[in-house]
Image (tube, helix red, strand yellow):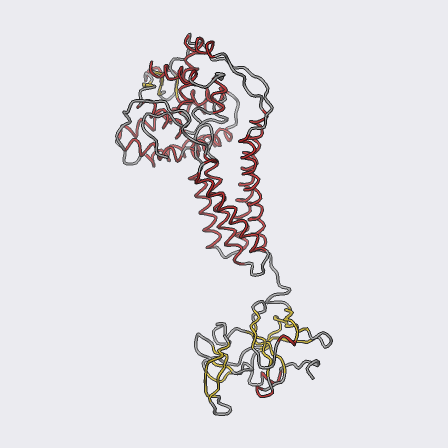
Length: 414
Length: 122
């Protein structure tokens, strides 16, 4: 049985074999031996310090993951001509990532995304929300991945994080199975929050640590020249560093964003029937529907039709928008002319399915096309006092040639 | 980020300073993991630096002539029962660079530890 640290070391070796593919055998071998020795020394050191193999394994894996980008960069450099230019010192060169333009842009995009998300969250069609959530989540992850460069070492964590982000999007888009999305989204969200907390804590910890005091320059050089150990002195400095403020702001912003994304996921997964299709929909008052009007109700997925006497009324019908043939949404075609089979006259204005041209009259009665029956009706009731129309979208009756005779008349009209 | 060859960037100055620190403690030659640990001990990094970043930096520094490396004697390694170590040491130019890194900072000159914690060249 292999212990965790051995498995981790084997993983690192496999990765080395992978990224050194195609290099000269000597260079490959040297790289392998170099890191092999490092792995061995770390495990020896950890054993001596009494560290558990699991911890050591985790540390090895982290070191490997954090170095993926650098490994690839190394591979490219070795492939090119060796660096032979004379060396010059260049202090003040690299700005921290969080102050670079690209990162600012990403942060702005994230902020914009969150704002969009908030707006979307306040509006009823919630399915687009999930996509927005996934997209914004990806942006945040990306921004986070860029920021999570170890400021001291330049270790970059973006390749594994990008993989996670893309994986999350793929899962969100491909898997229609909601519990699966939940199972995958939740640990991801938790992992990201945990990482944020750890980093934030480290930042705060670093700021609280007493600052180190100056050593006289002459003394230091003298000691260094003498090959002496370099002195370490401490003094207290309680100023709040600008960086900490900036970073906390960044983390708080991203954290709020994550919370919003998590909320959006739950919002998406939450099943809501009352008030929308599948429940009872309040469709306003009878006075909102003048005689002869056809009004689409998007929430309840029906056409509210106010039939005139000429059309078989008077009365209101809620016709399910779904064609009984193959389920396309049937539009009201105001300008479409067709011979009315009842009267033999050419008449304008029909319900006509765009898929196979099934054609229905004002009351949704089938007059032409492949549909097996007339449009289906939903149960419609009118509050006699207020005139409020309630449509029960779960009570659907199959359509028949007698659709019009089921039209509900309002007592207020008479 | 593309860098001009020969410029010290990222972790490289910290490595030079840590190597000088090791040399100051009479560790003339060191292996990679030893350096990674010394960086943590000095406060240059919070956690052990990744393999990729460390050995890429060491390769670059070797190419620029600031450090040099050799492989440990196989018999010595076999006697100790370990894989051969790759041993690095500062060249004389490397030592000069380490000194100038420690001195060229605006006053007051910080300690090596402070220098490493704040990051060099930022």
